[in-house]
Image (cartoon, rainbow, N blue to C red; front, side, top):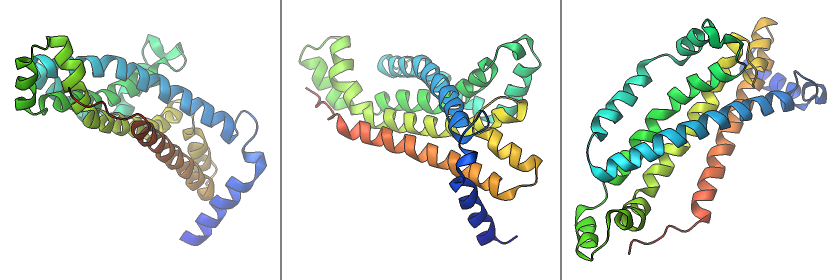
Length: 224
């Protein structure tokens, strides 16, 4: 089967309404994928962003935290997920998948938050201190607004990575769009595999686009 035949078959699979309905349909699997990804990303943001921003503000301990989180990139996410699945957590629904994805999302969020604050022009920071700003005012009015571009870049990177990586949940019997891909592999249906991959890619691009639009929608507050 040639490339064009596979792409055509993937288009036919996606155009078939029967593949979109039911428990194994695209809409149901998409809902599972978004649910798991959103929870994992929210938890990672709640942990990494405050820590990264605060460490960047005080200028101590950040390098160690960033290096420690980056070391997590070397740990295969599937290995972490498989470990959770053979632990007492295996009967906890999506919890193992969420835990593995959180570990995967932490590095870009923490690193960009920390670096974003630390790379704020020191002359601007000193000028703000000279104007009598407190530590909290300095952080909220100067450092955070100027660090926002890097923080948003880290958020977009983490979101795309989580959405793409969530497909491996299907390999340990969890839900999500990965189930469409694994079902295609199991039945030697290459167009279905490609269709599933296209759906994951489209979701990742859509989420990144939404985050870019949201960032542009709200004006960046000027440092003052």
